[in-house]
Amino acid sequence: MLTAARPKILVVDDRDDTLFAMESALAPLGYPVDRASTGDDALKAVLRGGIAVVLLDLLMPDVSGFEVAHYMARLEQTQDIPIMLITGVGQDPTLALKAFELGVADYVVKPVEPWVLRTKVRYLYESYLRMTALRERLRSYESGDERPPAPPSPGFEGRPLPRPA
Image (cartoon, rainbow, N blue to C red; front, side):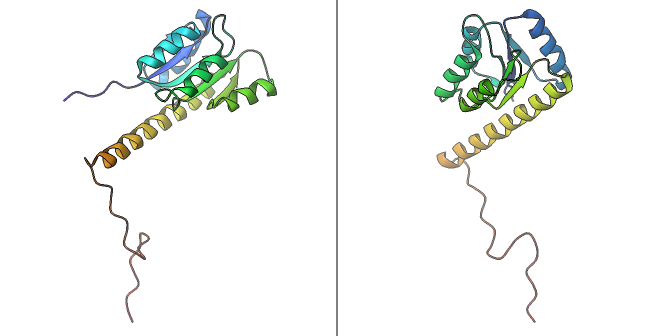
């Protein structure tokens, strides 16, 4: 029986030292990690599929993190992939607001503590897997391959009904 490959975390940054640092910080999670050094390469990777979370640098020379997030939000096949936008610009409420308006899942300012990065990525990764499983189950129900569970009987809330007197 074939099992589907685990989806990857895509780390996107134009600096090799940052890519290495993020990959090292994420290694204890045991999730597969891929890397891209440009916005164009990031878009190509997400369009190939198999990506569960994108860690995306805000400022890159070719295509900015904002542009990548905007493009991903417009495509059905990529719009549900959580994006963590990472910036070295510092605390800028205007940039953070723009990021969240684009639909990113998180906005993080460098430097990021490795345990914080792992905690946030674990949450986003596991949430993506749960959402994907629910979506597949819904498709199965809609196609008739599987029947939804029967609703509980009226008055049943996980406890026995009272005995008649």
